[in-house]
Image (cartoon, rainbow, N blue to C red; front, side, top):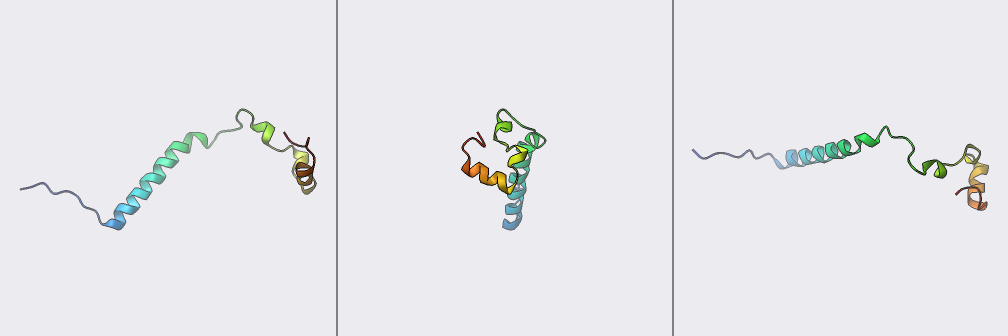
Length: 67
């Protein structure tokens, strides 16, 4: 008797591949999720005085407001 292969319906295969891809992406990014600031990140995060509407104007008009 010949061996039978398991053939899944097309929608089930598509969902299975989607779950596999999402699972691999989550597994790859999992170590980075609890991460904090890296290298020069603090230099690129606006200072507290720039986190307002006036600060936004300063960011766009004052060359020395940000890096």
